[in-house]
Image 1 (cartoon, rainbow, N blue to C red):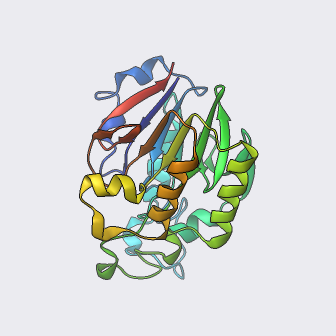
Image 2 (image 1 turned 135 degrees about the horizontal axis):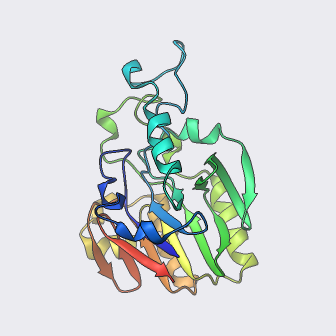
Image 3 (image 1 turned 90 degrees about the vertical axis):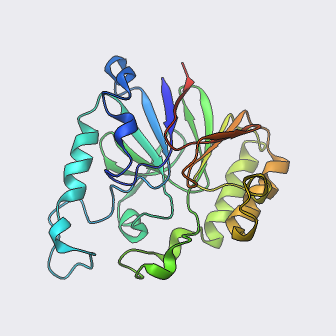
Length: 240
């Protein structure tokens, strides 16, 4: 089984997948998955006690990541996530890269896996393309390297890797999983003034790709736009 949902922001918005709101997890195993469409938020302060010389927003939060990640690790399912804009991107990149189901990942814990940008994975017989990242609209109130990271948007190399991997699969996958969405869908949402290089990239891809459904988060709404599913509170089952 594979389920998918929107942003969790650490422990701020993760109640949708607790045992009360998501009782289906009682029937799941570690061979089943929940995918989070960015802003996972549990790789922020550091998985272990933070040394004094490490730049964190509040040293009193040292160990918070370790607590939250342990809670996820105890659950029946395996957690997969793409990165959003509200992540500690430097910390994410510090994890070793490995190959999992055909694409590059950062394994945060044994059953907590960061699906990296521009990758194609085969999971339970279905192809997933992933491309995390987004622009923070609140970055003027955040501090670089403390609560905002410039690499919240993909690098040129990540765009090229995405195109190369899609070409290998003839631009045909079952599912797209991203954090933000293309300009074409943003226009339907009324976000016309918030376009950027990544949203333009997604709009262009949308004209080239063969896919069933495109899942995304970021906008804190639950709505369907044709083949595009915007997720926040919803938890959808996409693979039986």
